[in-house]
Image 1 (cartoon, rainbow, N blue to C red):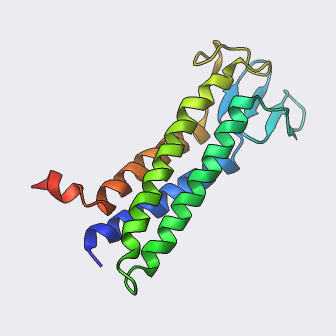
Image 2 (cartoon, helix red, strand yellow; image 1 turned 90 degrees about the horizontal axis):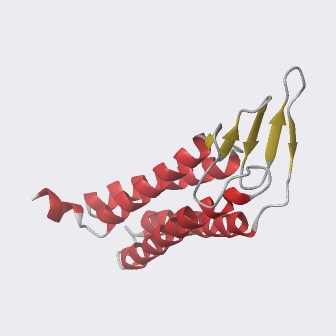
Length: 168
């Protein structure tokens, strides 16, 4: 197995970890008005001053449900790519399938990135599509997701062996 494919596999695994971590934490959008509200794709947590934090599963806008579906499909694609790359020393032709699966993963992650800000108009946020209101910002979960996209693209470049061409 080529060393670039091995590096691509490690980057793909790291992207998968970032994606799962971003889904597992409810800090995609954070508001700091009279306490704090943390919104995730599946849960909303609110903490008022002097009160314990309360987490509920809110009714999500269609845009965030689509983002969640795209994220799950991307995680499946990355996990499948990692598994295929682990099996590739015994069957080298599997790398060709892994290349295209990670490419599909990158596409669905980019679709999620385009769809997510459309949900800023939900009542809990009070913004407009692609525009958050003052005092509201994207949280660490969103940045983990951005790292996931960057690592997915980097892994794809290594698996497709584009990086050796760029390094010459």
